[in-house]
Image (cartoon, rainbow, N blue to C red; front, side, top):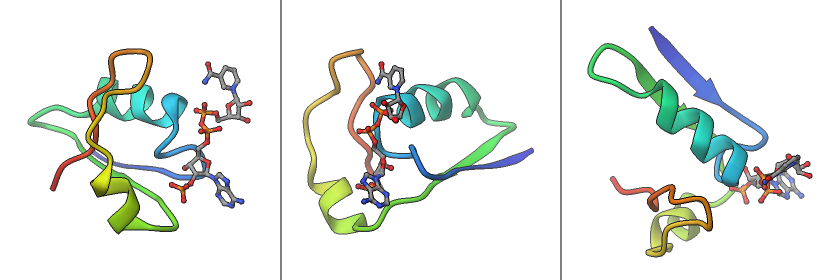
Amino acid sequence: MRYAVLGTGTGTGGRTIAGKLASPDHEVVIGTRDPQATFARTEPDGYGNPPYSR
Ligand SMILES: NC(=O)c1ccc[n+]([C@@H]2O[C@H](COP(=O)([O-])OP(=O)(O)OC[C@H]3O[C@@H](n4cnc5c(N)ncnc54)[C@H](OP(=O)(O)O)[C@@H]3O)[C@@H](O)[C@H]2O)c1
């Protein structure tokens, strides 16, 4: 299955949802206004979700 998490994608809610959905059988993409800024974050959020990486 392929999923897209939009609107809350890079926030805590979206990161948690994407992390639960992602697996070798399921592809997840995230919407963001600024991919460079999103990928530049290096800290996990306060809920233990890791930063995004390419
Ligand atoms: N976190 C919680 O525990 C919690 C609990 C209950 C309810 N909520 C609600 O859930 C919603 C999301 O919260 P969150 O903490 O997961 O994430 P968040 O940090 O509030 O939201 C981040 C997301 O919103 C997008 N965004 C922010 N400002 C925007 C704008 N002006 N135009 C378009 N997109 C914009 C961001 O996109 P970019 O990547 O482009 O910046 C990112 O995808 C909020 O309404 C919050 O009140 C959160």
